[in-house]
Length: 284
Image 1 (tube, rainbow, N blue to C red):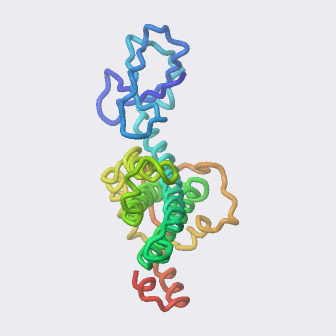
Image 2: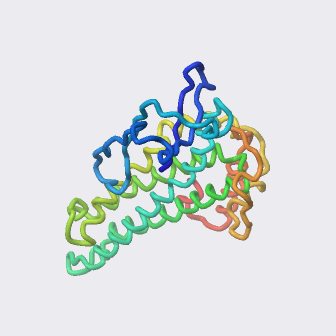
Image 3: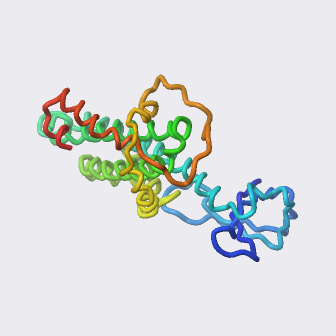
């Protein structure tokens, strides 16, 4: 029924020429708009990816969202939230794919035993689980930022939107190698679900900002990484006992002033070195 439309003012140019308008299709005559046919896609059949064309449609002034010309600001704020939430879709894919692979390989008999007895297979499944848990930790911390440290969201939303889908895509390719030819089939084990997951997962790194777009947004924040910050200020992001406050509890700008998360990297590495002598962990 509703369409949130980013419209350009005919008499304006530049950054202040765009505004958001909430279109109530039920309040328009049927001749004022045409819903275009769904775009044909590979997978994602449940998503209504289509368009709409308006024909002289008129809406009341009250349909304007925010101030006139504030469209880009509102879009940036909305993307900061959606980029924080999109990685959860990737996490669901990797978790399901890992369970799918593990179930198949556990029952697959090779060389007189289960496929999961092969060291390479066990290492790849373990590595996938480690990546899943690490990605979950990043996504969980970043999704708390809009509640606890909203001034960090310009950085955290870009970090999680790039890192989590990228990690999941890389791990899905490795799981496909372990699963072998079975990864291409659309029938058999779990009704060929892995093939669908591997096809659909690439979409999550694309919408609401592709990798180049998100990395460009993160580059714009790079100066904040050189600013001295109190690393303890970010503790709330990683402490489950901390109760989140309201979403964007105080106003935040389009750029972060500092980054207490990276400011605490030195202390985190030192603490890790005290607890383990594993060179892979301490040197990473």
